[in-house]
Image (cartoon, rainbow, N blue to C red; front, side, top):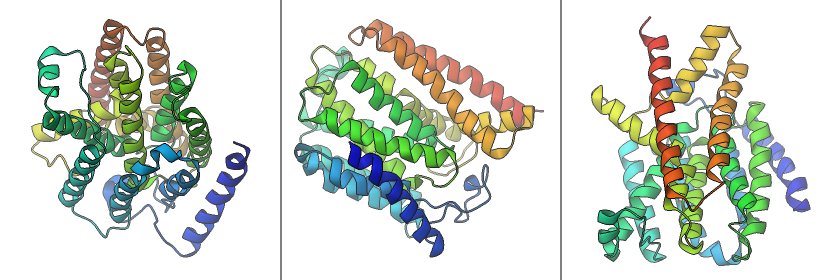
Length: 337
């Protein structure tokens, strides 16, 4: 643990210095959605820090997954550098990578306590497709919410903290020590991210989404009697943001793969900035803190009984209702004055 406390900030500072000096992997590459908060170039080094750190902290038992984790990182990196501009091609590569990963490592789910889905999950192919679909939602949803300082890093740091708090990773392939070291890396990135010194980029958000999704599926398959809806609740925000965005863009005849500035976190940022005349950086950080604070409260309530599906389902619906109500309020504030 001490090693990562000392090495991680040094690694961040070195990478930032080198990438800024050489003008490599900078945030502003021409897309309008990249400019809604910050008009200056910020290095997209967060994902590289995570991938390099993971080389040393990932457990031997999980190193077999690492090739696919790196590949999803590379897809994001090609997006960050604009060598892979086509959203459709990125999505197809994601599908191929994740499906091959799921099949090769036999990552399946046999029971989610929904009768008609459980019936089909008995068939291996359907289970593979279902797990692949879930991971695709998490990966792309993670990328969707990565638009404010500290939002995605704070969100996944909270999930890891919940897992450690509940002791779900105890005596499981030394997973607990891995998560502690991983959390240290994410907290350092969170600090630098809040100071506007680095961003994750697509590479970091893809990687973080896939690792977190796979981790929670493994835990669900190995923790007896845990409610599957607790796992769903932990990932509700990036997943619902993705699904809601698809429906929203379909309604307005826009491509679901095209980036825009109408995500919840962007509308909240706009509201705080316009309503209270906050600076960009303050409104940015405050928006992510408020969103993550809401989720911390929800996760805290959920952790009181992780085996109770009724409680978890109620919290999922409550979160979605709050999201929907606030979204339309914030949308009207921005677009229907």
